[in-house]
Image 1: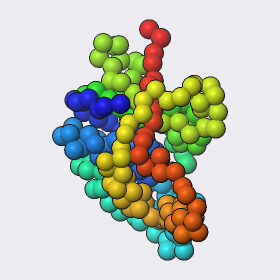
Image 2: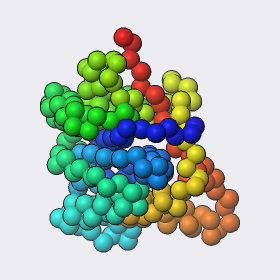
Image 3: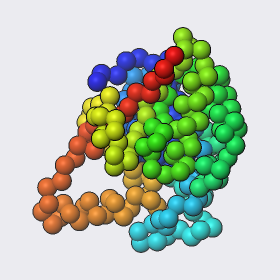
Length: 225
């Protein structure tokens, strides 16, 4: 798919690094087109299970480390408007539904985005991912349909394709895959193990597909009204 001009792109994810895995290349392409992008990151991922590989963080230092990693990742993607929304990691699922919907609604009212990226409810695996996707979808559903921004959603559940078919949108990010890698490397406390394992497999002569660095895939969220 060739990206079209957007009025404003809003990204809503719960954790630092969600964006790097899901949409980093696409966001860099939008930046290169001159499209304004706002990233609302709901938490600092302070309960992340990884403390670096080898460990260099502690439970006490991890929130500040992840905050700095998030800023560095946004620089790699060209995101100039980063919003740290101040919720607590692994508690987003317990937030009041109306509070979450209002949080998203307020962003939409302020920014008037034409496109929103988030997670696909029911297929996002992590409870915080699910709660985030639900809030975004419900906030948009409540908007008059002639004014609704489009939603492109990421899904990671094993049965996603079985139940939904192949993703609706595939974006070629091969021209900016180095920027996606930089975003992933910025989140080194969480991604170090993965990047090291990948390098090890390559060193051992394994031929790995780099399709995940060349394409990003999303589902269109539609409404029945």
